[in-house]
Image 1 (cartoon, rainbow, N blue to C red):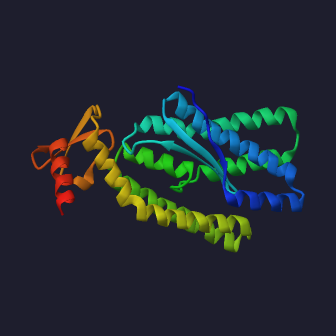
Image 2: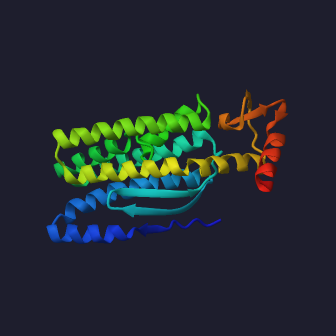
Image 3: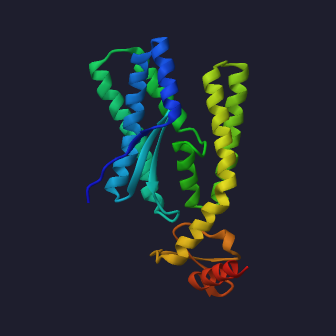
Length: 246
């Protein structure tokens, strides 16, 4: 099947581009965009290799987002590979640029994007990676809430640092934006968990591990469960039938 990547620019991106043109920073912006583009392309290409469906790549003034048609019960190691492919692709791109261009600021932009993106904030690659590693130890919801706590602690620390030591308005606004994105993630978790459960009810996943759990809110990724002396499929059938009738 032929794969066509849909590349999109968010409306806010055009406004940001106009500001770049007015301030004369087009050359610097071009290098930043090239790094971001190949970062996101790395995510997408690894997804294609692993036979994930890539819906689109969207670019914003603060970065990019690769959207996949993925299941909540996708394999943890596959998700980790896709996450790591972005930074690795960016590093390779930087070294190629460094061969042809000797501008010192390319290194600064590359390092800033790389380090910031790997911070343990849930909406960034680093936060998603931490969440996936936690999923190898804790159940789905516990992993999420630990990730949320780490995200807030990191964000609050960075915001305080910006206010007192590094007065950068753009970085401060970006941190505030991420703060509200995390708030939205908390509101959306109940829908994500319902998808997680529904997938396990509708599809037959071949899990190698099994666990006995006390309730439906303690399910792990990549594990089959037994609750109240019932196997997972039977329990989920009763759960969704009750919700449908209520």
